Length: 538
Image (cartoon, rainbow, N blue to C red; front, side, top):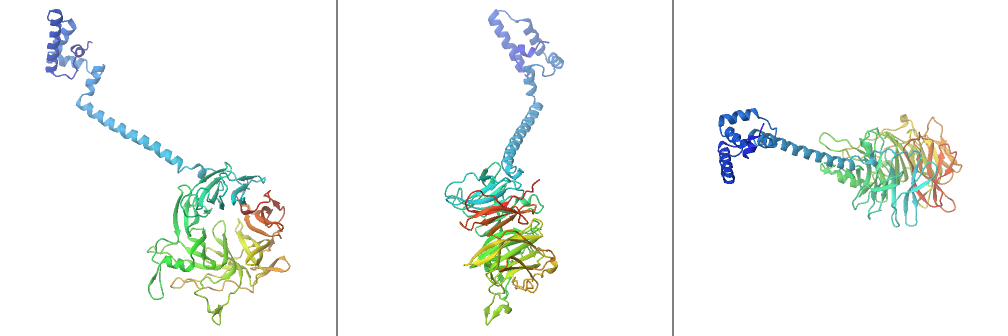
């Protein structure tokens, strides 16, 4: 059927006046061209039908629908469909924005949340990371199961890598280093790809984060570190640091005069800054070492809050010129070493340790164990500088420990070798004292010196351990040995053995019974901090 509207040159929605004007215009054009009225038959038909309202209505009904381009234009200009068009257009814009947002979100998520290094699982079983002395400082290195060494990439002269730790799943190593700044920042080393990435910033030096494998996949990705003398929780995925200790808020406690002692003041009374911190089994305690003038103090910090949000005070437990500790893999047991005993609270010395008003220390060097329920016992103590222990490490099973055994010479610990011994029976442990009203923890009797037995690495050096029904298991390492680290299967130990001629320390591995002593580092350089990967070998 002919499109009469097209013949007249008007839209289907044209008014009767517009159609009449179009007919008159076309007739005038035809008369001007031909000198005759009327025009062609098609025009005459269009004028006759569209010029009559009844005939036009019948024609429109017969030809309804947007079958032609002009019809579509007219159809879309109707009031009803114009509104629909606007709604569809608005929805299209919203949909487009959603698609763009999803794309941008995915790109952000891919770069940040789905960090390949945080989610990958790389086989590092049997590998040992350590710090190797260079001409200008120490550099992070790693030895594979066959002893092949790989040095961390990106190291330049003048840089010093100062600390090392493994991630909880063992896929990568964290390094505390001044590679890109004057302060020590955190770097993540992907040893298999040998790629080192900066994972923190700031002008305050940060220690390496220590991660715990306590059975919580998300929380185990968060490590504790020390920055600016404070304990921080570190999230490597977001590279953010959250302050943990000292607490930023808290009303403190009431003093003897009825006033208030702020929590910050309580911590300042114990020490000036933090050195090291680890979570307990249920993350309800933090074990930490604080530095103070002339020494260090091991503290236990309850992390639960009271009904009004108040925190319990920290408990100073052991103090000395040097203090170190290790925690069992499940977070339930802690072993603490002391060198050159000091009173935990110099301002509150028990009367039994005062002679003519002067303090008398009960022993010089000690090794103690405690659990997350607050019980503790002595494993070793010495009243002479001819016997001392250092570098305690609890086995993966949590049932025994390895320790460096030696003596103090000119104020320094000198090792004779390594020893393994069982830890304890809980029934032998003394309950922990409770703090008084001011938050002070009285020093109490922590061991029975009448109950002990001897493990001899050398006939002239007695080493005393707590009585146990299990036999002792000394390692066959009777040369100076330091910084032991357990293999996750508990059958091997890596450590530093000191060369008698050069005094340099090299990386060795031995079976737990002392057999198959093997030198891993193939150079005559000096090494520090050897640590086995936490991954078990398949």
